Image 1 (cartoon, helix red, strand yellow):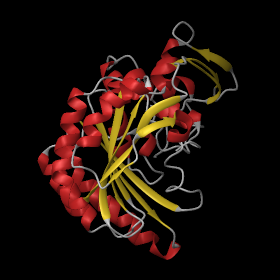
Image 2 (cartoon, helix red, strand yellow):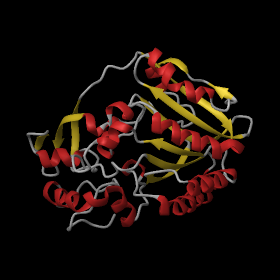
Image 3 (spheres, helix red, strand yellow):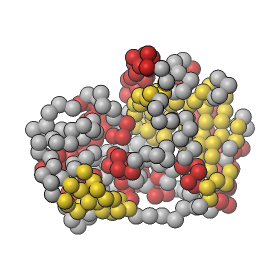
Length: 324
Protein backbone atom coordinates (compact mmCIF):
# COMPACT_ATOMS: atom_id res chain seq x y z
CA UNK A 1 0.00 0.00 0.00
CA UNK A 2 1.31 3.41 -0.93
CA UNK A 3 0.73 4.93 2.51
CA UNK A 4 2.87 2.34 4.34
CA UNK A 5 5.27 4.16 6.64
CA UNK A 6 8.87 3.99 5.47
CA UNK A 7 10.21 3.56 9.02
CA UNK A 8 8.33 0.41 9.96
CA UNK A 9 8.69 -0.97 6.44
CA UNK A 10 12.48 -0.66 6.57
CA UNK A 11 13.05 -1.78 10.15
CA UNK A 12 11.06 -4.98 9.61
CA UNK A 13 12.61 -5.85 6.24
CA UNK A 14 10.48 -4.29 3.52
CA UNK A 15 8.92 -6.54 0.88
CA UNK A 16 7.86 -4.80 -2.31
CA UNK A 17 7.59 -4.78 -6.10
CA UNK A 18 11.31 -4.10 -6.65
CA UNK A 19 12.61 -6.95 -4.46
CA UNK A 20 13.34 -9.26 -7.38
CA UNK A 21 15.88 -6.84 -8.83
CA UNK A 22 16.90 -4.61 -5.90
CA UNK A 23 16.20 -6.62 -2.74
CA UNK A 24 14.32 -5.59 0.36
CA UNK A 25 13.94 -2.03 1.59
CA UNK A 26 16.41 -2.78 4.40
CA UNK A 27 18.94 -4.03 1.82
CA UNK A 28 18.97 -0.53 0.36
CA UNK A 29 19.48 1.27 3.67
CA UNK A 30 22.98 2.78 3.76
CA UNK A 31 22.71 4.91 6.89
CA UNK A 32 20.38 6.08 9.65
CA UNK A 33 20.24 8.62 12.49
CA UNK A 34 18.97 7.06 15.72
CA UNK A 35 17.98 8.58 19.05
CA UNK A 36 18.60 5.92 21.70
CA UNK A 37 16.81 5.33 24.99
CA UNK A 38 19.38 7.41 26.90
CA UNK A 39 18.90 10.40 24.59
CA UNK A 40 22.03 10.05 22.44
CA UNK A 41 21.89 10.78 18.71
CA UNK A 42 23.86 8.07 16.92
CA UNK A 43 24.75 7.52 13.30
CA UNK A 44 24.34 3.92 12.15
CA UNK A 45 26.18 2.85 8.99
CA UNK A 46 28.66 0.22 7.83
CA UNK A 47 31.45 2.22 9.56
CA UNK A 48 29.62 3.97 12.42
CA UNK A 49 27.98 1.77 15.05
CA UNK A 50 27.88 -1.13 12.57
CA UNK A 51 26.23 -3.45 15.08
CA UNK A 52 23.28 -1.09 15.37
CA UNK A 53 23.19 -0.70 11.60
CA UNK A 54 23.00 -4.48 11.25
CA UNK A 55 20.13 -4.66 13.74
CA UNK A 56 18.11 -1.89 12.10
CA UNK A 57 17.94 -3.82 8.83
CA UNK A 58 15.10 -6.17 9.68
CA UNK A 59 15.59 -6.48 13.42
CA UNK A 60 13.02 -4.24 15.03
CA UNK A 61 13.58 -1.00 16.91
CA UNK A 62 16.39 -0.05 19.26
CA UNK A 63 15.61 3.65 19.29
CA UNK A 64 13.80 6.32 17.30
CA UNK A 65 15.12 6.57 13.75
CA UNK A 66 14.92 10.22 12.76
CA UNK A 67 16.51 9.92 9.30
CA UNK A 68 17.03 7.16 6.73
CA UNK A 69 19.55 7.25 3.90
CA UNK A 70 18.77 4.90 1.00
CA UNK A 71 20.44 3.65 -2.14
CA UNK A 72 18.11 4.69 -4.94
CA UNK A 73 17.44 2.97 -8.29
CA UNK A 74 16.08 4.30 -11.57
CA UNK A 75 12.64 2.81 -12.26
CA UNK A 76 10.08 3.77 -14.90
CA UNK A 77 8.36 6.17 -14.77
CA UNK A 78 6.33 3.58 -16.76
CA UNK A 79 6.71 -0.15 -16.12
CA UNK A 80 4.98 -3.26 -17.48
CA UNK A 81 2.82 -4.51 -14.62
CA UNK A 82 -0.66 -5.49 -13.51
CA UNK A 83 -2.85 -8.45 -12.62
CA UNK A 84 -4.44 -11.47 -14.29
CA UNK A 85 -7.46 -13.19 -12.71
CA UNK A 86 -8.71 -16.80 -12.90
CA UNK A 87 -11.69 -18.60 -11.31
CA UNK A 88 -10.94 -20.26 -7.97
CA UNK A 89 -11.81 -23.62 -9.55
CA UNK A 90 -8.59 -23.33 -11.56
CA UNK A 91 -6.45 -22.47 -8.54
CA UNK A 92 -4.38 -25.70 -8.43
CA UNK A 93 -3.18 -25.30 -12.02
CA UNK A 94 -2.68 -21.54 -11.58
CA UNK A 95 -0.44 -22.12 -8.56
CA UNK A 96 1.60 -24.73 -10.44
CA UNK A 97 2.01 -22.35 -13.36
CA UNK A 98 2.89 -19.48 -11.01
CA UNK A 99 5.67 -21.48 -9.34
CA UNK A 100 7.14 -22.52 -12.69
CA UNK A 101 6.81 -19.00 -14.08
CA UNK A 102 8.87 -17.52 -11.24
CA UNK A 103 11.50 -20.26 -11.55
CA UNK A 104 12.21 -18.98 -15.07
CA UNK A 105 11.52 -15.26 -14.61
CA UNK A 106 14.33 -12.68 -14.71
CA UNK A 107 15.28 -10.66 -11.63
CA UNK A 108 13.30 -7.68 -12.90
CA UNK A 109 10.06 -9.59 -12.22
CA UNK A 110 8.39 -9.65 -8.81
CA UNK A 111 5.06 -11.51 -8.78
CA UNK A 112 2.61 -12.39 -6.03
CA UNK A 113 -0.38 -14.72 -6.01
CA UNK A 114 -3.61 -13.68 -4.27
CA UNK A 115 -6.96 -15.25 -3.38
CA UNK A 116 -9.79 -12.74 -3.24
CA UNK A 117 -13.52 -12.24 -3.69
CA UNK A 118 -14.56 -10.29 -6.78
CA UNK A 119 -17.17 -7.51 -6.59
CA UNK A 120 -19.81 -9.93 -7.96
CA UNK A 121 -19.12 -12.36 -5.10
CA UNK A 122 -17.11 -14.87 -7.14
CA UNK A 123 -13.99 -16.25 -5.47
CA UNK A 124 -10.94 -15.93 -7.70
CA UNK A 125 -7.19 -16.40 -7.78
CA UNK A 126 -5.02 -13.61 -9.20
CA UNK A 127 -1.37 -13.20 -10.09
CA UNK A 128 -0.02 -9.65 -9.88
CA UNK A 129 3.38 -8.90 -11.38
CA UNK A 130 5.73 -6.00 -11.94
CA UNK A 131 8.69 -5.88 -14.31
CA UNK A 132 10.88 -2.98 -13.24
CA UNK A 133 12.92 -2.74 -16.48
CA UNK A 134 11.91 -1.32 -19.84
CA UNK A 135 8.35 -1.72 -21.09
CA UNK A 136 9.52 -3.82 -24.06
CA UNK A 137 11.49 -6.18 -21.82
CA UNK A 138 8.55 -6.35 -19.44
CA UNK A 139 6.11 -7.26 -22.21
CA UNK A 140 8.33 -10.18 -23.22
CA UNK A 141 8.90 -11.33 -19.64
CA UNK A 142 5.22 -11.26 -18.65
CA UNK A 143 3.88 -12.66 -21.93
CA UNK A 144 3.57 -16.23 -20.51
CA UNK A 145 1.54 -14.87 -17.59
CA UNK A 146 -0.90 -13.16 -19.95
CA UNK A 147 -1.18 -16.22 -22.23
CA UNK A 148 -1.79 -18.88 -19.58
CA UNK A 149 -5.41 -19.91 -19.14
CA UNK A 150 -6.44 -17.60 -20.66
CA UNK A 151 -7.39 -15.40 -17.68
CA UNK A 152 -10.93 -14.11 -17.24
CA UNK A 153 -9.44 -10.66 -16.62
CA UNK A 154 -6.11 -9.29 -17.85
CA UNK A 155 -5.01 -5.89 -16.51
CA UNK A 156 -1.28 -6.25 -17.29
CA UNK A 157 0.21 -3.54 -19.46
CA UNK A 158 2.23 -0.32 -19.38
CA UNK A 159 1.45 1.64 -16.21
CA UNK A 160 3.19 4.40 -14.22
CA UNK A 161 5.11 2.71 -11.42
CA UNK A 162 3.71 5.09 -8.80
CA UNK A 163 0.17 4.22 -9.92
CA UNK A 164 0.84 0.48 -9.72
CA UNK A 165 2.39 0.91 -6.28
CA UNK A 166 -0.94 2.36 -5.13
CA UNK A 167 -3.06 -0.40 -6.70
CA UNK A 168 -3.89 -2.04 -3.35
CA UNK A 169 -4.91 1.17 -1.60
CA UNK A 170 -8.62 0.80 -2.39
CA UNK A 171 -9.10 -2.72 -0.88
CA UNK A 172 -7.33 -1.68 2.33
CA UNK A 173 -8.80 1.70 3.35
CA UNK A 174 -8.06 3.39 6.63
CA UNK A 175 -10.75 2.71 9.21
CA UNK A 176 -11.46 -0.87 8.17
CA UNK A 177 -10.78 -3.63 10.73
CA UNK A 178 -7.76 -5.88 10.04
CA UNK A 179 -6.05 -8.91 11.51
CA UNK A 180 -3.16 -10.46 9.58
CA UNK A 181 -0.89 -13.46 10.10
CA UNK A 182 2.35 -14.43 8.30
CA UNK A 183 4.08 -17.70 7.46
CA UNK A 184 7.36 -17.49 5.52
CA UNK A 185 7.75 -20.49 3.17
CA UNK A 186 10.60 -21.80 1.01
CA UNK A 187 8.22 -23.42 -1.47
CA UNK A 188 4.49 -23.80 -2.10
CA UNK A 189 4.07 -27.59 -2.01
CA UNK A 190 0.92 -29.14 -3.40
CA UNK A 191 -0.24 -30.02 0.13
CA UNK A 192 -0.14 -26.37 1.18
CA UNK A 193 -1.73 -25.21 -2.07
CA UNK A 194 -4.61 -27.65 -1.60
CA UNK A 195 -5.14 -26.52 1.97
CA UNK A 196 -5.15 -22.85 1.02
CA UNK A 197 -7.70 -23.38 -1.76
CA UNK A 198 -10.04 -25.33 0.53
CA UNK A 199 -9.75 -22.75 3.30
CA UNK A 200 -10.39 -19.78 1.04
CA UNK A 201 -13.54 -21.44 -0.30
CA UNK A 202 -14.90 -21.06 3.25
CA UNK A 203 -13.60 -17.55 3.94
CA UNK A 204 -15.97 -15.76 6.38
CA UNK A 205 -15.56 -12.26 4.97
CA UNK A 206 -15.65 -11.23 1.28
CA UNK A 207 -13.05 -8.58 2.13
CA UNK A 208 -10.44 -11.10 3.32
CA UNK A 209 -7.43 -12.02 1.17
CA UNK A 210 -4.88 -14.82 1.08
CA UNK A 211 -1.55 -13.83 -0.43
CA UNK A 212 1.69 -15.51 -1.43
CA UNK A 213 3.92 -12.43 -1.45
CA UNK A 214 7.07 -12.97 -3.50
CA UNK A 215 10.24 -12.22 -1.51
CA UNK A 216 12.31 -11.84 -4.69
CA UNK A 217 15.46 -13.16 -6.34
CA UNK A 218 17.82 -10.38 -5.22
CA UNK A 219 16.47 -10.48 -1.67
CA UNK A 220 17.09 -14.24 -1.54
CA UNK A 221 20.73 -13.82 -2.63
CA UNK A 222 21.80 -11.53 0.22
CA UNK A 223 24.05 -13.53 2.60
CA UNK A 224 21.96 -14.66 5.61
CA UNK A 225 24.19 -12.96 8.20
CA UNK A 226 24.50 -9.67 6.32
CA UNK A 227 21.37 -8.18 7.92
CA UNK A 228 19.04 -8.93 10.79
CA UNK A 229 16.28 -9.99 8.37
CA UNK A 230 15.93 -13.68 9.14
CA UNK A 231 14.27 -15.25 6.11
CA UNK A 232 16.66 -15.19 3.16
CA UNK A 233 15.81 -18.79 2.33
CA UNK A 234 12.06 -18.11 2.04
CA UNK A 235 10.69 -17.41 -1.43
CA UNK A 236 7.26 -16.29 -0.24
CA UNK A 237 5.47 -14.79 2.71
CA UNK A 238 2.14 -16.62 2.96
CA UNK A 239 -0.35 -14.18 4.46
CA UNK A 240 -3.92 -14.43 5.68
CA UNK A 241 -5.27 -10.88 5.56
CA UNK A 242 -8.53 -10.83 7.49
CA UNK A 243 -10.54 -7.67 6.74
CA UNK A 244 -14.03 -6.68 7.92
CA UNK A 245 -16.11 -3.62 8.84
CA UNK A 246 -18.48 -4.59 11.69
CA UNK A 247 -16.95 -4.44 15.22
CA UNK A 248 -19.47 -7.09 16.31
CA UNK A 249 -17.56 -9.57 14.15
CA UNK A 250 -14.19 -8.95 15.81
CA UNK A 251 -13.94 -12.22 17.74
CA UNK A 252 -14.87 -14.44 14.79
CA UNK A 253 -12.76 -12.51 12.27
CA UNK A 254 -9.70 -12.83 14.51
CA UNK A 255 -10.23 -16.48 15.43
CA UNK A 256 -10.58 -17.67 11.85
CA UNK A 257 -7.21 -16.39 10.53
CA UNK A 258 -5.48 -17.66 13.66
CA UNK A 259 -6.78 -21.16 12.93
CA UNK A 260 -5.80 -20.88 9.27
CA UNK A 261 -2.33 -19.66 10.20
CA UNK A 262 -1.85 -22.51 12.67
CA UNK A 263 -2.54 -24.99 9.88
CA UNK A 264 0.12 -23.32 7.71
CA UNK A 265 2.84 -23.40 10.36
CA UNK A 266 4.12 -26.92 9.49
CA UNK A 267 5.10 -25.57 6.06
CA UNK A 268 6.68 -22.40 7.46
CA UNK A 269 10.25 -21.34 8.21
CA UNK A 270 9.20 -18.37 10.35
CA UNK A 271 7.19 -15.17 10.53
CA UNK A 272 7.66 -11.83 8.75
CA UNK A 273 8.43 -9.25 11.44
CA UNK A 274 6.16 -6.61 9.91
CA UNK A 275 3.18 -8.96 10.24
CA UNK A 276 3.64 -9.66 13.96
CA UNK A 277 0.65 -8.25 15.81
CA UNK A 278 0.32 -6.73 19.25
CA UNK A 279 -1.14 -10.00 20.59
CA UNK A 280 1.89 -12.06 19.55
CA UNK A 281 3.30 -14.54 22.01
CA UNK A 282 7.02 -14.90 22.58
CA UNK A 283 7.23 -17.93 20.29
CA UNK A 284 5.89 -15.87 17.38
CA UNK A 285 8.32 -13.03 18.08
CA UNK A 286 11.19 -15.52 18.09
CA UNK A 287 9.90 -16.96 14.80
CA UNK A 288 10.20 -13.48 13.28
CA UNK A 289 13.94 -13.34 13.97
CA UNK A 290 14.98 -17.00 13.91
CA UNK A 291 18.69 -17.56 14.44
CA UNK A 292 19.19 -13.79 14.75
CA UNK A 293 17.20 -13.61 17.99
CA UNK A 294 20.04 -13.95 20.50
CA UNK A 295 22.24 -11.43 18.69
CA UNK A 296 19.33 -9.00 18.54
CA UNK A 297 18.60 -9.53 22.22
CA UNK A 298 22.20 -8.60 22.99
CA UNK A 299 21.82 -5.42 20.92
CA UNK A 300 18.62 -4.63 22.80
CA UNK A 301 20.47 -4.98 26.09
CA UNK A 302 23.20 -2.65 24.80
CA UNK A 303 21.08 0.12 23.28
CA UNK A 304 17.82 -0.15 25.28
CA UNK A 305 18.57 -2.00 28.54
CA UNK A 306 15.40 -0.81 30.28
CA UNK A 307 13.18 -1.85 27.35
CA UNK A 308 11.87 1.68 26.84
CA UNK A 309 10.85 0.87 23.26
CA UNK A 310 8.46 -1.99 24.03
CA UNK A 311 5.17 -1.11 22.36
CA UNK A 312 6.12 -2.81 19.09
CA UNK A 313 5.72 -6.57 19.38
CA UNK A 314 8.51 -7.09 16.86
CA UNK A 315 11.17 -5.92 19.31
CA UNK A 316 13.15 -8.87 20.69
CA UNK A 317 13.42 -9.18 24.42
CA UNK A 318 16.67 -8.44 26.21
CA UNK A 319 17.49 -10.40 29.35
CA UNK A 320 16.11 -7.58 31.52
CA UNK A 321 13.07 -6.88 29.38
CA UNK A 322 9.50 -7.42 30.43
CA UNK A 323 7.21 -9.87 28.63
CA UNK A 324 6.01 -9.13 25.13
